[in-house]
Image (cartoon, rainbow, N blue to C red):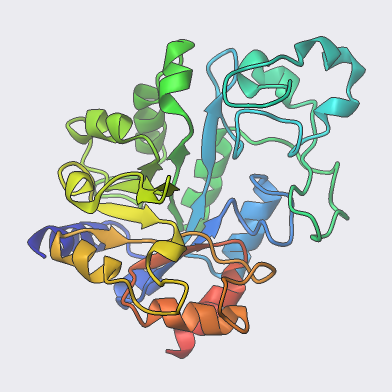
Amino acid sequence: MMKLLAVLLFCLAMAPLPAMAEGKPIVIAHRGASGVLPEHTIEAYERAIELGADFIEPDLVFTSDGVLVARHDRWLSDSTDVADRPEFANRRVMKPGRAEPDWYAEDFTFAELRTLRARQVFPGRSKADDGKFLIPRFEEILELARDSKVGVYPEAKEPAALAALGHDFTAPLLNALGRYGFGPGGLPVFIQSFDPDFLRGLRNKTRIPLIMLVGVVDGRESVMLGDAAAFADGVGPYKAMLIDARGKDTGYVKQAHMLGLLVHPWTFRDDKVGEGFPDIRAELRAFLALGIDGLFTDFPDTALAVRDRR
């Protein structure tokens, strides 16, 4: 518990957000306000800020010339119009982890990526803004967050695979955050990753709180809480790990807190409510009642409304 208190005090020592100052769970705009606008665009982040999100979340990948840009995946076919661009037809390749050929951010220069336009990736969501918005570089997002005085919550995507291609996240990520005032003594920030080795390596290089993302692999946690506590300040677990199929508390939050870890589950969506819940508000109330410290959501206005009524 002392570790958890230290992290909370660290975050409050930075330029405090209203929700953090009041001790409320933070609302993290997952890929921006991605429920209503194409994800990982400046416009989606701006909308999330307008709605009152405490943090905006950019997933980061590299371009061929070493620029950090915001994409949820290294591949581009579902989130951009790259497939409609004949000039890039020969960039479609097979790579490990994907069952079919695709276009990858690391095979494009930043200037080339800027010619593409973003698309809504989720079926059933509005496509009205497809083709309008650019792929942003990390610095643009940091400038927006700094000027709006909100926190940032970057995720390093596939750091091992990108390191093998010559793109190491550590220096570019930490340097960019420092330049824009995020970190100790500045604006709030968490760094997240699904790669425990990456976070272990980062631990001795920064005092920024680190969040170990946790999923379920073959029916088991991808990283055990005891292991995460050795190098991380919190966990971002898949939400089904916290409440079981019968709607019962699994004890995950309590165990994490006993180890001094913050808990920020993912992902809450108005249009994809968790199994067993009648609607998103009931789902959010159940998870907030567990004592979580924050949550990822595609619809920050809904989460804020439920949180602030408690």
